[in-house]
Amino acid sequence: MTQQPLPAPAADAVKAALHAIPMNATVGVHITDVGPGWATGECPDTPPFRNHLGTIHAGAQFLLAEAVSGAAFAGAFVQYVGEAVPLIEKLDTHYVGRAVGDLTARAEIDPATLPAAYAEYGADGRARLLVRVTVKDGEDKPVMEAQAHWYLRRRPQDK
Image (cartoon, rainbow, N blue to C red; front, side, top):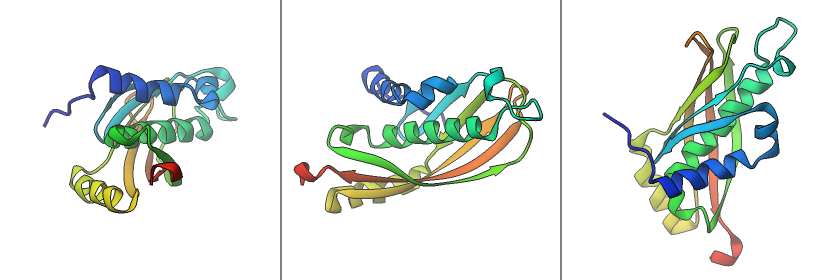
């Protein structure tokens, strides 16, 4: 199954929101593509963000996973972005290898969970979704697996 990206204006808005976060800009996190419930991103290998082993610091990997999961979540709820606030509640990480070279990441929401989340948001003005993330290094080797727990709530004035 081929996943379609969001229309360009919507994708650009999601990317711009993530790129405007100062920490993402500092580390070089960049969202490369976004669709309804999925996103990809990258983070360059730069010396200031290496650890004592000379590999990519866990903090940079975490930041990339958080950003790409947020883009996937925003892509799923793009029609509500102006009226709601997305918040990450928890990010469970499992580092599975040393990261060497530029990082890439892919985040995905199980499409089967979206209808219930949309119904919950429509009824209560809030919804929760799990976003799974894989971060790979420059050798295309998985170095981190994560599960991001995202929450969306309607802004109080829009009730």
